Amino acid sequence: MESSATPGTHVETSAQEAGRYFRHMAQFVGFTNEDASAIKESQLVIEKYIPEIVGKFYDHLLHYPPTRRYFLKSDGSIDQDYLQFRMVHLTNFWRRTASGEYDDEYASFVDKVGLAHTSRGADPKVYIPERYVIGQMGFVQHAIGEALRKELHELDPDLEARAAKAWNLLLMVLLELLSRAYSEEHEVEAGELYISVDTAQVRQLAVDTYERGLGLFRTIEYEDMVVADAAAIPDGERMIVQVGDRSIGVFHHGGKWYALHNYCLHRGGPVATGSLEGDTLTCPWHGYQYDVTTGKFLLDPGVGLDTFSVEVSDGKVKLRIPTITMGAEELHEPSAVSRPAALAPNQFRLTDLRPGRAVRLEVSGQRVAVYNVGGTFYATQHDCTHEGGPLSEGDLQGTVITCPWHGSRFDVTTGKLVRGPAQRPLQTFRVAVEGDRGRVESD
Image 1 (cartoon, helix red, strand yellow):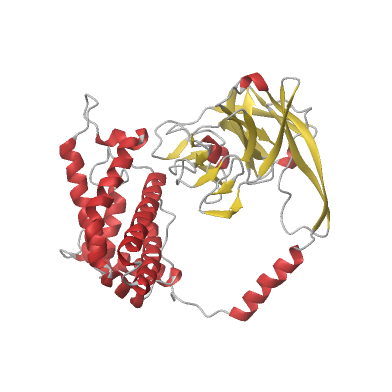
Image 2 (cartoon, one colour):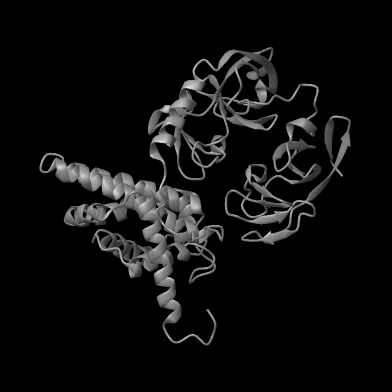
């Protein structure tokens, strides 16, 4: 806003814009006035459980080192005054949300809550990574569902069903409002909020797509590939290996071996690098959980991560990778692209790295990301200089790569920092092209 604006203009405009965005997302996910009324009907139930929810919320944060650090004094002890200060704000947030009243002022309030978790908030030293905000919203969603079930399942099952649906839809809207504070790419769409669509045609297209996929592939050929020495992955450990443009997590777990696609179903997070407790593997980005022994998504076992057969023989770990699909016209790109064993860790085939894509290699033990920018190849260090985000899994637009973790941007041709929160540029490497192969040089 320009400095000539009248007092209160900026606040009003900001609230109106936030309110418009709230209504836009509410309409998109199907959150209606009836849903708001259902939340208001369940208000007393939820308020009863707010102290318990808030307590469990912060107990969880304090148990997890990356979030615990925000509540510690310089001597390492918990700052109880600051913790209680944050609890007051969170209690007010959920009490206000449970009221069922969602005007422009409320939407602006949510906007400010989201901004407060970024470096652009009131305290620039506070930066809560987006993945933890998303994960904790999932935590609250589960807690609210449990509260409704405990209080209403026998007493008023109709209200339980209506309120559970309403809260789930509302939390989708709130999650988008909180998340948009992390990126300038969240834009409010201009024009109408609702566009007429030929529903019958869209549904028929979905049927056609499904039927076309039946019996799509007649055979799949596999290649057994040695990816590591078994001694390099002792029981209880894992190794991330690169096969073409696919990252695979190889786990030695409970005396057995498992291999999973290192690509979370949610936003492609590096799930194989997450925490493993028992058989539960948790994606470090947004908290999605999988069974490491099967790859199944715990909330919906009908879907899961791609898995690969693992064999250990002669001290070597071998993966069986699908390499060629035979049959009718493919609807999708092949599920895996293999890198022949003849390629060194610092080499790649030019045909495997398409324009606008990136791949991870290793150069003298260092992880390197290689990018194809309009047919010209560039290489930088693989890990973001902020908190080590995997740049090969980021979004490459032109010459700029965006870290998938916190949105830092770098020019891959020079390593120059384009936008934070990172504060240091990337190390770059020379890429040599010989025939159908590229090679990243250590110097």
